[in-house]
Amino acid sequence: MQPAVLDAAILEKLISAAVAAPSIHNTQPWRYRLNPDTVTLEVRAAPERALRYADPMGRALSVSAGAAVFNLRVAVAHFGWDPVVQLLPYRSQPDLLATVRLAAPPTDRAERRDHGHDDLYDVIWRRHSSRSPYSARRLPARVLCDLTEAARANGATLWLADPEETSRLLRLTAEAERRVSGDPHRLAESRTWIRDIGPYGIPPAALGPRDATGRLPMRDYVGPRPDGRRGDDLPAAPFETRPTIAVLTTDQDRRTDWLRAGQALEHVLLLATSHAVRASLLHQALEWSDLRWSLSDAHPGPGHVQMLIRLGYGPVGPATPRNGAAEALDRRR
Image 1: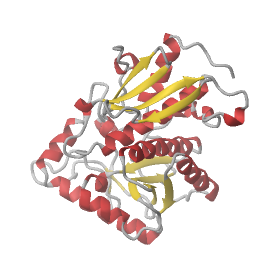
Image 2: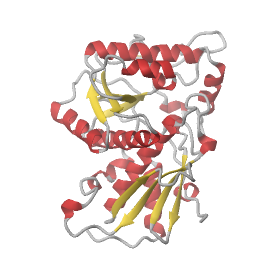
Image 3: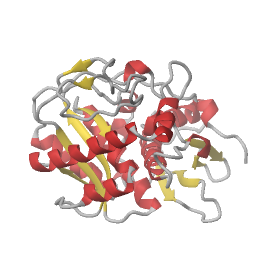
Image 4: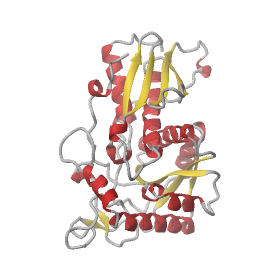
């Protein structure tokens, strides 16, 4: 496929694909800029949408931006270019997280960097988090193999927790939920992003039910009610008794690793969607430094845990809002 001409319509599609990526609390903590001289898209942090209490180091922001970078790679390849990615290209610009240059593809298709990703372009718009209960159906080995390879191709490792390890990971997640319930700063920050209107945050209808059994600690964005009860006014449903939890790790824990983890995460999520597998993210324990290190204790995979991914078969999750491409694109030079 020959590259298209980068006109305003295609630029809008590229930015729309990037904005469709998942982000913590749907904060969409990014903005984009085009350098027309080099035909390069810049992915920059939007610190005004960072989470001061839940994400003080900006790790989750970087993972979110990495997911957007992967969507850009898919979209750029879909329109015929070869995406050339640089992570943190300039120390003098710490807000510049990545660049994606639209290069002419090599003659030999085997040499193209993302020749296998353009078939995921349509999946970008179908991927949603699904916080509903899943069925008892297990994921086929071939699907798990595909997801594992997707993570590896992006510099990360994905492994499936066994039942004992799953119980340990869920206990740490539940402990994180308990801590948040007593932290007024984190509660206030979380509540800020539950929104009925606007392009950011999570609509109440997308929060999903709580687990009636209390086994699976889904995130409670609102926290204790005035009477001290936790989540009692939310709908309840029995969740799966044997949840499938995949653990995404990186060998190191630098900003570049966070950005790689985000690319790996989005590749896994898009592939899962293409197989009709639903996913939700259990990020709570990663927001406490001691719990995050505990996540890495005694697990069989290498490195640093970057995300817990709950996988299974169930209903399609509701779409959450997104900012428009025109608003996400910074036209300053």
